[in-house]
Image (cartoon, rainbow, N blue to C red; front, side, top):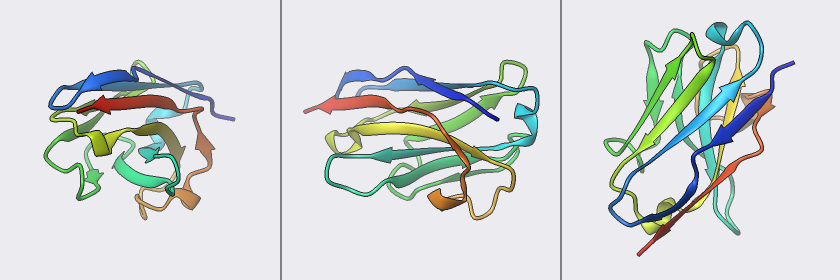
Length: 124
């Protein structure tokens, strides 16, 4: 069983930055792929970014590539999402999720464990 707890959300002005964290329980964190997804009101959950167990492979949605960076610290059982140049359309509840196998990284249904989510609101 894996438990995930996100933090770091809040209200940010457009053009600003924020960093989300996701702390995972368990001693096998370093063997899991980690992903970030988001869901805005009235919209489906969408993929944001993923990182392989070692951190050597990352993958981003086109909408965030170049602005967001996913990273992980396996010693701290934590994955991060650094978000820069934020836009109002980035406003959503952000969820971290985890699974064993990296590919397909962007498919939500392949992730077995999810956090409760953290709200990010970008004001214009």
